[in-house]
Amino acid sequence: MSLLLLDTGLVLLKAIVMVMVMMLMFVFQDIGPGPPTSFTESKRICHQNKSTGKSRRSEQDHYETDYTTGSESCDELEEDWIREYPPITSDQQRKLYKRNFDTVLQEYKSLQAELDEINKELSRLDKELDDYREESEEYMAAAAEYNRLKQVKGSADYKSKRNYCKQLKSKLSHIKKMVGDYDRRKT
Image (cartoon, rainbow, N blue to C red; front, side, top):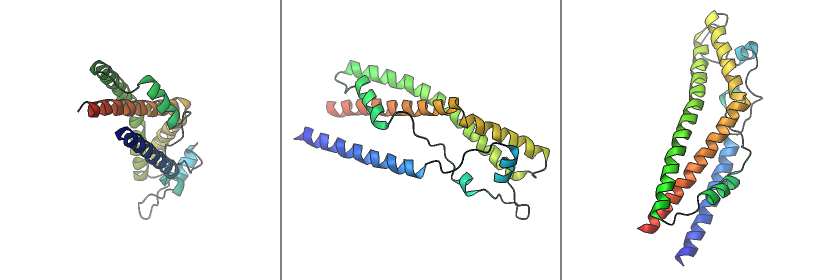
């Protein structure tokens, strides 16, 4: 009876997660035509209203996101993790999972910090552009760096790192779940 309830609970939890993922996909879908490709386009997007000092951003820039779907679905990744990390049956296996978790966590944190640094710099430059007059050398230098970083974010390397980061996060989540399930069964 308790196994049936556990199976039913897991199915319900999986359905809830899938609905949440679909909602996030809808909310964070890429709705713009892409990053600016030139100084002129960047100037149009980041044009400053001289009379008020406030930025006039296009609606697409305001809602721009990084979200794109990866090559593997959540279900495919989960199946891979279940094969690689089946439910824990011993304390020794739990220790092994924890060691693997710690190793993967360090890799994830390092990679995520690299991606976050690019996003942080883009955000800083975006604010900096609002502070300069469009014809100034400072504005041109900041716009050039902004456009360069937007190209970095659009590169295959960046997207590959971002997708790999998502895979690592999924792997960490699965290992954590397996350890938690084992700990609950033991108590």
